[in-house]
Length: 395
Ligand code: ADP
Image (tube, rainbow, N blue to C red):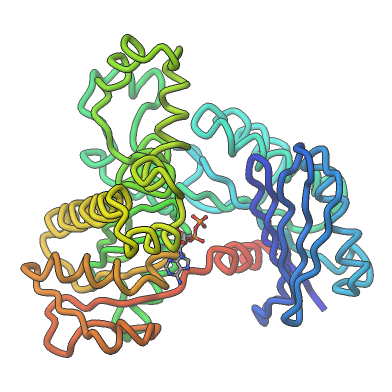
């Protein structure tokens, strides 16, 4: 039986999902958390059960060794050789990678060479790749890039209006993120409508802890809200989204606690968004509880969150000159009726009308009325499946 692992190595975590391919059956999934920190944790899920344990994990290499041990221990594989494919999510592919690639030493070096585009993520992705290369040298190893889907953006969309030399010399441009998710849900939407993707204009809203909106024209990303890094675009769980860059030197001059541009950026990335404004939590479920209890900061954070979503979605109606569908996905997009309702009702001028009963029931598929000119869909994303499928292409 052929098995494929989809691996997503973050700065201090490693998420994995084990598939039986080509059947696309999920055998098990899990996560190593707090790698390199105190109280590291491993969770393995299969057959509806969670197996958690606390265990010291110093680095990604050790996490990979532990993962293989656990797969054997839980009889999810009987020998290492059963894993014939490994797909690695890589956050930044820069301008080098327009599609998924078979990993060799050269590709690994290239992934490392563009680490400046994702300083927390690419080194972790590379560490995960190297660990598996040593342990499973014969498996088909494929890198799947979060930025690849967005490499179809036209230059007018991806360039920043600053002197050309910064693009030429330093590759400063918009790269976007969440590409596998935007690609997957736009293709699923075309299947849902039973229409060729080439004939559709779709706005995809991936709204989780990280969030981005993409304009998809004929199956190609033509603009997306995240920028040079995932800090751009809409307000998120802990990220500010779009900011006027003049705030950076202003804060450095005025706040004695902020001592470098990097510290300001870290604050925009980790202490901002829903967390920064609510002063309570970065999590939407927590925010809604405190909002409903009447907490003023939480009410404001929620209103700002919806406002930023509306602004980016309406921009993309402009970019596409009209759209056939708006697709909601990821943790908030898939589960939060109120956010969907507030966004769609606030954009009714564009010809969208929500079906409150379908929206409330949380159906997968259409949540707009029969008369709605722009269809509104909820489609659960599945980035791991995209990764596992891409591995199959190289076998
Ligand atoms: P990540 O970017 O970490 O992958 P997810 O896509 O898992 O994030 O989304 C996490 C967000 O989804 C959190 O803000 C969480 O509160 C929210 N969320 C998950 N389930 C629900 C739900 N049932 N109702 C509202 N929000 C939800």
